[in-house]
Amino acid sequence: MPELPEVETVRRSVEAHLLGRVVRLARLLRRDVLVAPGDPAGGFSRQRGTRRSATPVSITPADLLEGATIARVQRLGKQIAIIGVDRSGAERALGVQLGMTGHLEVGRGEPATTHVHAVWMLDVGVLAFSDPRRFGSLRVFRTMSELEEHLRPLGPDALTIDPEALAQRLAGARRPIKAALLDQSVLAGVGNIYADEALFLSGIHPEARADRLSGDRISTLAASIRRVMSDALLAGGSTIRDYRSGTGEPGTYQAAHRVYGKAGHPCPACGELLRGSRVAQRATVYCSRCQPRRRKRPALL
DNA sequence: CTGGTCTCCTGATCGC
DNA sequence: TGCGATCAGGAGACCA
Image 1 (tube, chains in turn yellow, green, brown):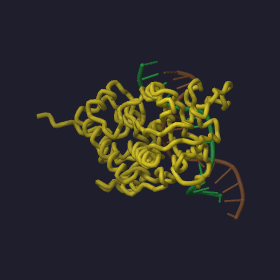
Image 2 (cartoon, protein in one colour; image 1 turned 180 degrees about the vertical axis):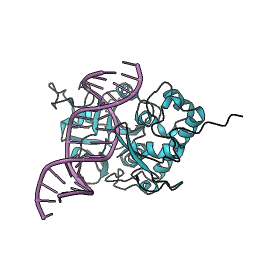
Image 3 (cartoon, rainbow, N blue to C red; image 1 turned 60 degrees about the vertical axis):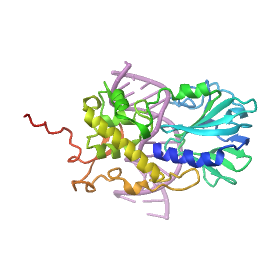
Image 4 (cartoon, rainbow, N blue to C red; image 1 turned 90 degrees about the vertical axis):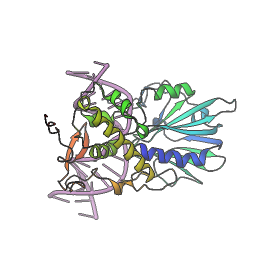
């Protein structure tokens, strides 16, 4: 389940192979993983009942960067954008959302993975997008301002979040802090694993109301988020099931998880058994002693 | 406007 | 060994 550290690891590993490469041929094997301008937002009409857009928007090879030279690979939160320059010198982008099980992988020949939905033949090497569950998607951005538009709703990147920005985004949020952290418009890049890890490090109960946190606690939380993100990034991310970098390397940060997936195990800080619950429809693990629902009232005088 | 719930999808795992 | 039920969750759609 790629979150910011995994996505950044993928970004770095594919960018190293893609810079300056020319896309000779782009092949889309499943139209429904692609979102094009004019498509209903969220993909291919994934509304109740039916799939498939009634009026599929036409896609050109150039929309998939065919003929372009790769200039850079950007990331904001969990969103990746591959930036290409076409023959006229104009920049355009292809967005990649990995979702739960998406993979972006560079290689020399045919990708070894199953569920491959798009392949790019480069002047040197091959890039492939695969995703068994298809929660991920590709997005066509014909101009850089279309990409900007898409990224605008996102909050600041979690890797560098500062307390002031976090406090500003949490002001007036009456929902549980964990729900707010998972909201990409509050903060971009945190998912279920790192939300639990950061809240544990901060000593904050996942159901604490976001707008009731003091400035001090928000500062602690911002520092915990930055620390968890950067430590996980240094470890190449967390490989729980099938996450791999853009060159097929697993991450190792799962060995450093303190609470995620450890309900019923002793708290690494105090030994109390970790509790499992659900917050915002997500499995949630926390220590009821280290992360009390209410702090003790500070002593008066 | 905010926040809660539903939905998409496949593979791993569990109980019988 | 087989098989149905359950769970995993990112993010847009939908609804109160």
